[in-house]
Image (tube, rainbow, N blue to C red; front, side):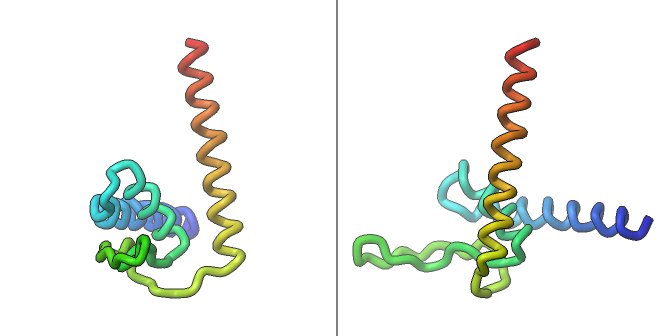
Length: 97
């Protein structure tokens, strides 16, 4: 029972995290998924970046400034593949109705 409560609390916290940080991204299409991944990985994306030698000041998405690991990358790929499969299943079900 305790693990179920913990999972529910984590999901609620992740939704709050995504609502908080998702709208900070310049792109409405990528802000929310990027915020979700930052929340899942407990990391921070974004911030100031150089594009073609020019500094662009962008907001951070997330709070934990840490180096990402190979395990983080593997987790991100698993999450992405799962999302892709779910999208295909949903689209197929809708198409077949």
